[in-house]
Image (cartoon, rainbow, N blue to C red; front, side, top):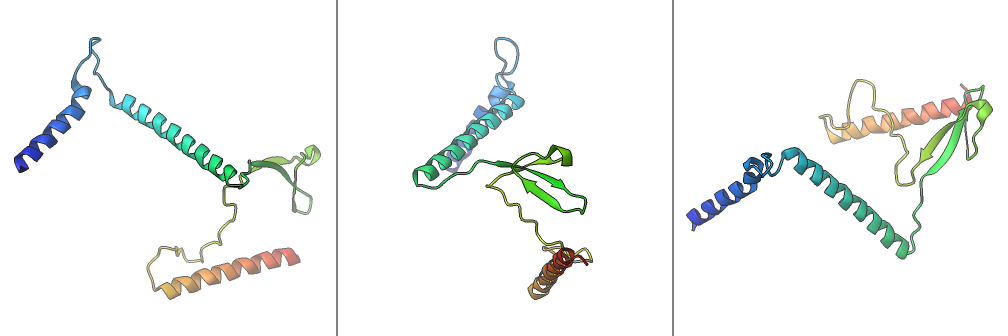
Length: 149
């Protein structure tokens, strides 16, 4: 039985590899790795877009609204304050910003000074304290900026 399984595996490997070495009528191999990769990529893209379309269809049938990306315009005034609107402000040199409702636009708090990282070693309580301190520092920075200090 083991010999049969081993022979079956060898036959399978030869059958999968042979098209890359056998020549067709034009003298070229029957299959090339780059062609296989291109076809696989196209199939994956088609599968991905079909899946996304199916999810969107199911969500709409269930009564969920799906939102399209929104374009807003932003510009900075003389005081350095950012302004956002749905109409372009040509004199202020506004730039278009695409807001995708399916993406996260929240910026995480910066890591604490000293080059630490969230995956660094150390006791979990110490990492949690460092993260909490970084969040508090970020909140203090925002409060100081908004109060004009």
